[in-house]
Image (cartoon, rainbow, N blue to C red):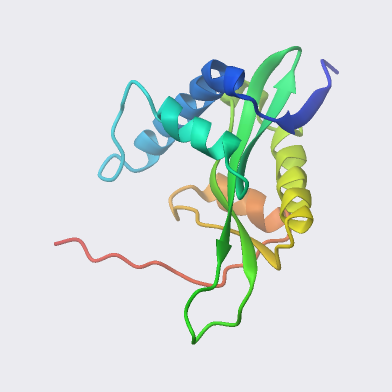
Length: 158
């Protein structure tokens, strides 16, 4: 069946493996939405990765298989700040990716479950993310994981 996939918190030394999968995830978005995304050499700058890994209200979780990073989730906490909102803390997945060669092997499911656990540990009331409509595979995955649509972001091209 192959090597076991494990999930752990990223460290600063994980940046090269993380960056490789983040770049592949970026290219997936370029293919889906070339009018929104463009190819770049570095999808996530190392400084931003370091910030996520070292701050208290954020983290990067990585999926590892045979010593290689094959997926990641970048997480942070959001807090309601407007008087019109119920005071609460929310875990937010800012970026999520699994290497194409390792999709449908359980890495995404394990990462998502770890994101849910991380959010609970941090006192989050919910786990949120946004997803591009064109990314129907991701939409199906998130719905299979129990997520539901609560908001839509609409665009008018001019």
